[in-house]
Amino acid sequence: MKVIFNLLNGNWIDPVTRLPNKEFAGEVLKSLKESNEDFILMNIKVAVEDLSQEELDFTMSRVASVLKHSVRIPKDIVCRIDEGNFCIVIHGIDDGTAQKVADRIKDSLDYLLLSYAGKKIKLDCTINIEKIGGGAK
Image (cartoon, rainbow, N blue to C red; front, side, top):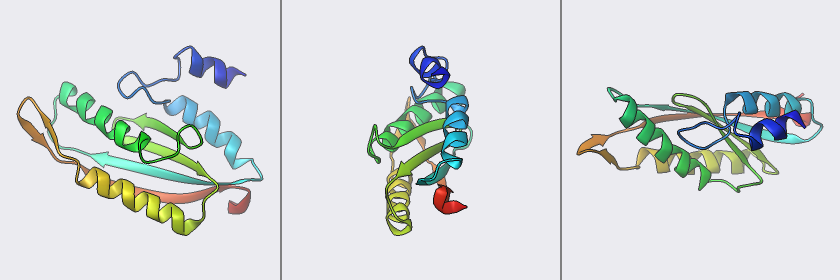
């Protein structure tokens, strides 16, 4: 119940992206690793260079939007871990489908055209996939 309370009252919400944050992700991942069910965990690293805090916040909010629209909300969970790191937990897909989802997300982020106050922003993205839960033991 603590997890739900902290999420609903905003304690575990990232203020920039409006996604669940690192603390929420830690609680969820701890539970899922102990589960008998299979889950896919995608760790997404988004790198950008030479951005002010405003530009970075703008960029990360757009990245969050792409991630949310790339998965099955609310079935899949998208969290912001820290500045340029996100994770996605997906249930009910195989390795091949997970790779296709990761490729689609990477393509979407690689081709994302961002501009803030006339400055063009280019992203570099890497995605690592791992199995967690029952099947990963």
